[in-house]
Amino acid sequence: MASATVENVVNYQQEIVRPLANFSPSLWGDLFTSVPIDNQVVEFYAQEIESLKEKVRRMIVSNNNNMAEKLNLIDSIERLGVSYHFESEIEEQISNLYNARCRFESDDLHTVALYFRLLRQHGIFLKFMESDGKFKNSLRGDAKGLLSLYEAANLRTRGEGILDEALTFATAHLESIAPHLRSPLKEQVAHALEQCLQRGIPRVEARRYISVYEEYESKNDSLLRLAKMNFNLLQMLHRKELCELSRWWKELDLVSKLSYARDRVVECYFWTLGVYFEPQYSRARIILAKTIAMISVIDDTYDSYGTVDELEILQMQWDIKEADRLPDYMKICYRVLLDLYDQYEQELRQQGRSFAVHYAKETMKEIVRSYNIEAKWFIEGYMPPFADYMTNGFITSTYYLLAATSFIGINSVTKETFDWLMGKPKIQVANVTICRIVDDVATYEIEKKRGQSATGIECYMKDYGVSEEEAMEEFKNIAENAWKDINEECVKEKSVSMEVLKRVVNLSRLIDVVYKHNQDGYTHPEKVLKPLITGLLVDSFNV
Image (cartoon, rainbow, N blue to C red; front, side, top):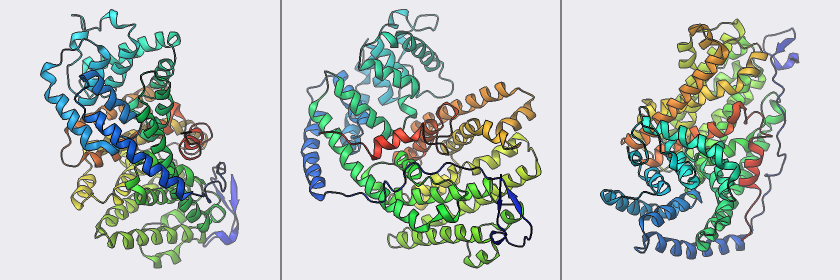
């Protein structure tokens, strides 16, 4: 615990003890504040990529491939992170495969599982099952087929018993045969068991798969070269964006002015790469990263510094005059936040989309009010009913705010799309559920040590009279069912485009990765995020 000096406190003459968390400093220093870009290299990459894209495009539309070859080509293109170049061509080929499904008679498990994952059809695995509902024992040694079955089964929805059985079957046998496989399939199976494709961050998965694909004898050299060059070119853009963001952060100097808060601007930018890595979302990433950085500071203000009286004052009225009532340290945060949204509004007004900022502001106001409720619970030692905790916790998860903010920079998102999001559709409820539940499990031990009684786990244990272990298991089940809801809505939701749905899904994927194995990878990025950030923003491919 640490004390604040008198001049930093409003209307207090005595020393105030604050619940400081003592966060570790940034891992990155000034690494990204200056990133030289060679324009000649950029031009070379751009020209070479255009040539390679034409070669790959011809492969996609070629009629010389059989169904299995076509499926594997599309799968490789998507896994390598270059499918955004060929969206219309891939959609046409998928449509053709769908229309030909009545002639689909393959007995190759890998092809059938891959077909299912790309087309998302129900009941297609029945031919591989015995009459007792179990998968045939003869499939146990088919590593490639089991891997595709495993990935396909992770797209299951509620009530799909066949796919539940498929996941159990594939997982058990992959774990059994993995040590005996040869590279690169051995590494691919090991990674899939650690991180299934459906819940992985697309940019991270592409980075890893490029190295795996290179080891396969069946690789296509043109596609591999395209993937490497495209990765490197995008990395140059991402470094440039992070440089802009890092300079903004350094100029604000919040690290010294608000030293109690986490210094995680690089990790904030990584979060945006998880939501969208493609070049057309450049401004969207900057907007989202700045918002994440500021909500992180506000979160730490409520969790790790502010007193109950100070926090009561910080209600988002969105009026600069209100800043005069705040303690000095809060004035800094409040003014930066208001300036930030003014900048968003000015920028979007030029595009005729200033309406988007209204939705982001409303979710920001909502989250501050809910942070205040949590702070009161903590200070008063109050443990709310689990239902009340979850209602408030959905908001403080930040995922209502981040989903709305992620839409701001997408030019195709209309007012109707924001209204859809604010109506809390099923996929968004599942998204915030995953964030809340997984975060609660990952941070439970730390919060318990800090004396936090109003945690999700504690509230659930009290309401349902269960043990800590039983509560943890139920939270895992809640998260699994939320993923099933996301899978279902990606197929059934027709109110908005897939471009919009992908942002919501990607937010959930970030939670699965960053909080893997009950670790808070954002607060403690050394083990989880550092290697991922290095892979995406520091190391490039040799071409």
